[in-house]
Image 1 (spheres, rainbow, N blue to C red):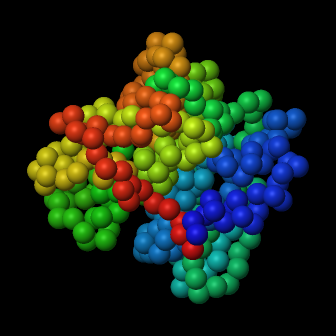
Image 2: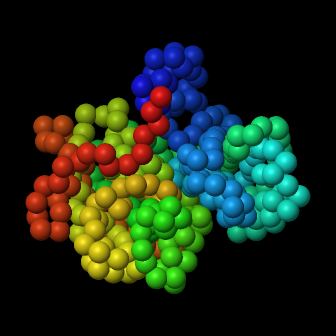
Length: 319
């Protein structure tokens, strides 16, 4: 079973009288009466991060991953709680000092504040982060409309290359290794867009599990499909050069996740305000496709105009 099947079978019924739970099918909990928005995530060594050789970077990745859930909903993150399980080696004085310093840097960068947490002794390293923000409204999942344009912020795929570098699965020069590993540990979050996206997005999600996987999640309760144009999916100049030099599949590299960019849909009439917002904030927003009715199959058109097979695109938690 994958995580959504487990939720539906064992836990969905427990939330049926709580509208704020959003049917356990969104990035956050949203109590509209209190303007309260909450997200929670768990991170396991060997699953969400390879190892703990660089605790100061792992903790940055974890914090950014957590607050990304709020940002994509149109909410400024404000507070966070962090809990961790570890042993004397992983939670050594040196490592704890590095973690503390990194948290201080992330707090300053994103204007967030630590409120509490918990520590537990365990030989299995893990962290859980709860992020909290406040907003009168949020951008929900499963609210796309037929003929909506599909947009994504920033660039996709750099983080996946960084992961492959850390696993010694790709051979590139030292400067490129540094660039891609940095993108893996410190994804670029579009905090400035949080308060603007509510003005034009019909539905949104952050890209944590991969472009195709998260686009499927975005409309998983709607009878809708999509068409994406590969050539319009934004990638960095470094990734573009890499794909060409090593003859790699673009869709595979942009669909593996850990990008934490915002994927959203909007009415075609909103294109002007989206362009204006992108320009005024100095951020990259790319139109990559369109939402269709379920009379058509979801598809991705490659750079040669051919339809691509959508298999094993992204990450799913399976049990």
